[in-house]
Image (cartoon, rainbow, N blue to C red; front, side, top):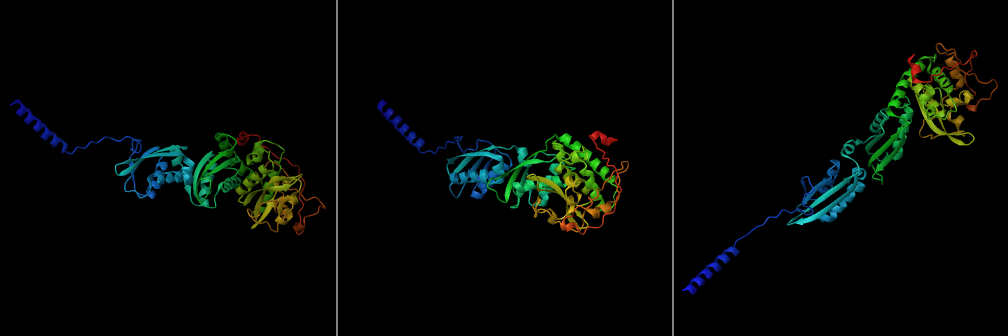
Length: 426
């Protein structure tokens, strides 16, 4: 009897066991390994290579350091394509080449799809990335650079779509902008420019670092002083016709020429406020005065024969529709060789980029300016603004047909100086 009962119990147990093994069971365990998306942020769905590149670029644009990608129905090798896309974004794309230090990823297979975690190390912060300005024309770029210089900004990040623009061109533009307005930009900007990616191309980011040699507050005060000083001087020149005013302005600046090695001697501020200028400072000061007088004028950066070939600065001025060379630094000693001179007369002793500057072939000469200026006097300071040609001195061939010189009484030269900004308040 006991044996029968035991047999029946055993049979029941066997039948129960068979029922248990025939049931379906599912176990869900959270995956937290590589490619799980646990690095933070939303998981992004990727189905082709273009989506992959765009997703990585979006992470860079938004300064996102960690993200997860899910590759569902992806055509191609996920690992190989990730490696290629990361390399492209880090080294070939302008934003990545400039802003990214490194991109790393891990890929993991989860059932029927791949997931990857990306980690990006940045060289730039979010504010720097969002501050990048984009330009497609040189006109737009010049306008932005002018604004940066006038505000004495010490840096900029510019994205430029142009095959004609590179590091050298940007530095040339900064130089040109300074020479065009040495009043609003009172000290010369010394710049370094680095383009990304390094290989070049028509789509790059350029990082600029600019040094003006002084504090922003000091530079702004210099600009303020110059903006008052220039019209004051122009109003005291005394001449009326542009030709006479051009000569009067040149004579005024000529009196500031000095051997000073002070850095300000190379600026319009040094010439017009401190009365100390070398050839560069004189050229910038003359450009500032001519601009205020509405006489077209440019600063020329070139070379001149002296004891040896040396860097030299002078001006081009446009009078009666024609351009002429003016070297204010030589005006006192050699007026006829320094004022209203043609290209032909300067060749062999001066050297400049003839493609960068307009040709100078006009018929006017120094004696014409003397006649136009007359006895221009500065109010309250009786000064001789004109210097007569030395009697009997030979003229260069292209100057022999100049107008007759009208005699001007010799007068004592008294050149007022301004030693500081405070002098201008009187």
